[in-house]
Each structure stands twice: as C-alpha cells, then as structure tokens.
Length: 286
Image (tube, rainbow, N blue to C red; front, side, top):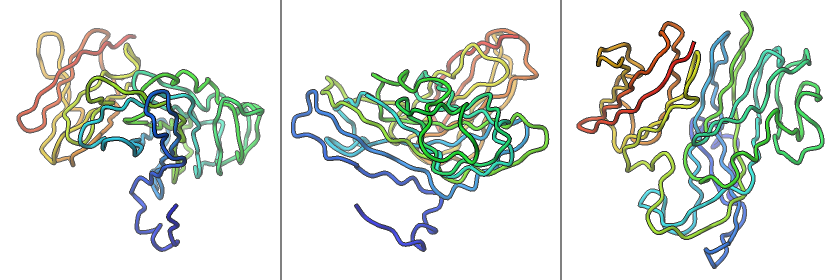
C-alpha cells in the first residue's frame, strides 16, 4: 500500500482514493475480494433545508479494466460506510442516506442526541451499537437506521452517492471525507457489464426514489467532455424546467431534482450530451 505525505494528501483534495484491500483470487468463479474507496478533502457545505450530495465511483481493480469493458461481475456480499469527517453542530437535525443502483439506505435518521460531528464513524450491520442509541461525536462502529444488507447481491461497481439532508432552519456544517468498503464475489458474465456506466459510455439511469415527493436523485454518465443539458417536460412535450446545463467532464454525474413547485403526474426528463440523447419518465406524487 502506498503511503502519502500530508502535503501530497492536500494536493489531492478533490480526488477519489481507491485501493485494493485483498488480492483477487486466481479463479473468478465464486472467488471473493474486498476493496474500499474514499472521497477526501471535500469541503462540501451542508446548508439548511437542503440536501448535500457527493458521488463516489467504485471500480475495483482486477480482471479487465472497468474503463475498457468488463466481463467480470462483482456482486456485493456486504458493505461498510465510513463517515470519516462530518462537521455539524446538531447531529439530530441530519438525515444521511446512501444511494446505489435502485436502492437507498438510511444510515442516520431521528437521532435524539444534542451533540455534534462524526469522526471515523463506521456503519456496518454487525455493529453492536445502533446509531440512534449512540452519542455524539460519533466515533467507532454503529449499525445504521436501515440494514445495509439490501445492497447484497447487487453489482458493486458503479456510482455510490452519499446524501446529507439538513432538517434545521439555521444550522450549517461541512462534509470533509467519507467512503465505502465492500466485500464482493467475482462471477464471470457473458457480456461486458456496466453499472451506471463507465467513463466511455453514455447512460441515463432511472431516478430514485420514483414516484417521489418532493425530491429525487438522477444519475447519468457522459462519454466525453461536452455540452450537457438535462431538462424536464410534461406529457404534452412542453418544457417545464432545466435540471442541469453547461459543459461537463466525461464520467459519472449526479443531480437532485427539487419538485416542490410541480403538480402531481408523469413527467419526462431528457439528457442531451452532444449528439447523444436519452429520455426517461418520472412520477411526482402529492
């Protein structure tokens, strides 16, 4: 494992750190491995009555490169989530949710502590202390509000999104560092596998949750640096709003759609990147 000086760590403050924890077995059928990835030095503000989203791309090494096509499936056996550094003055005002694929798992909700901050807090189903019975600052292992086992059996590679929602009207904080550690089994697949796209692919994923009220998350991948627009239309094909617009780098992206001003019903969201276009529907419920 490569060690990094404090100075080198500072220069990588917006980069994802990913490294292999245990070697991949020689046989890919029924073999197991584990890897972890972290997002460090984020400085992402947590503001009142809004969600802060951060996206981690989990592409563990082994087999063919995930950026050139991959015939190896990596099925989740168990997941641990590290909230390394989250500074917030009133933890009971926070909801923390992990998104991946079509699943969303609530790590933190309804805390009754009046304390502040998370310091090297690890969420794992086997922990003896439930998060809602712990005390701030949260340090050590805790079982989450909902079991992380719902991710078991899903494809591990792809986008993992941490959402931090500030329920307070006047408290602010900062998300500095978080990550995931995943044990997974390796299986051969008959075709190259994709989970929310690799940087060479163009994908638009189904929003989650769906139906929703008042907000939902949309994940997509663009194959190269280009002008990107993500727009919302009603069933008559009339423009409703712009969700994202502007030049974006190649790779995965995530946005949150706030629909507080929309009526109930079916809408369509369209992603355009250069000459590539994809459309999906979503449902707003009141």
